[in-house]
Length: 185
Image (cartoon, helix red, strand yellow):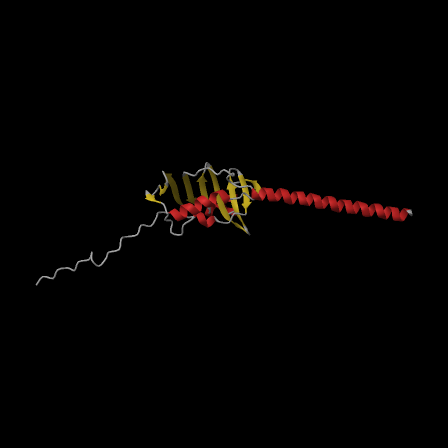
């Protein structure tokens, strides 16, 4: 084998080994990123939620859902809470994933990431904020960290009319309950 062929073979082997190392490094990085994407705000054994505070920063409205015995109540209004809405919140809380960590928290992120129009939620001993959408992700502030979360169900923590109370249906008046006014002659 000539020197020229030997040098070409060594160059080829070097390039091939660099490609293999690069692929393995990318595979490890993807695996690590996927693990981080799966990290949840609440661990596997989610705490039993007794008080859930939701503060809509844009509307400046706060609602406190409080569990008493087995029933949920809206503390501010003293009324029974809408069970469907509370169940959606309770089932959604353990599903919140942290996603990609962006950086440490800075006050200027309030407007940049839409937290000034977002939600601040306290539940299970944790306080976190949901900001605006960034492409397919939502800005999430937990403690002193900013994340871009794959969680996109922010709507669960809001009510279009702001009323978290259970609707009480008025009893219908039947025909037999109605009496015709007496006509005096």
